[in-house]
Length: 103
Image 1 (cartoon, rainbow, N blue to C red):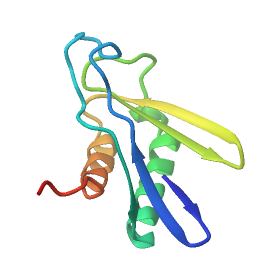
Image 2: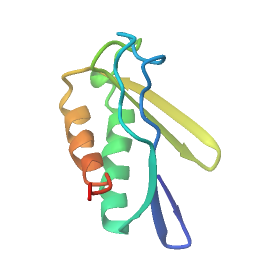
Image 3: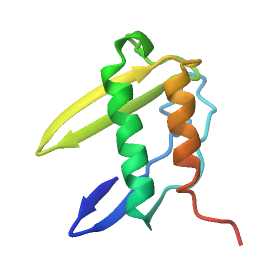
């Protein structure tokens, strides 16, 4: 996600079978689209909470885990979220709203 000059966009780069722990999981089609700034702010807030919530973190990627990366002023912060963490579920619910509608 990025916010530039008041315009918010989200970019989805899905997991591919080559990247997945099972070797089969496919996260869907990639996309990039505009979103409203209110949704952007909600997602950004939960993503920051996910980075800061050390109790939700695990050390390595496992099936069902989620990775969050935040970049602010060219400084990146990353966290791997446990499969059943509440914050991961909350973030996924918000991100679901960014998906393009199927025709």
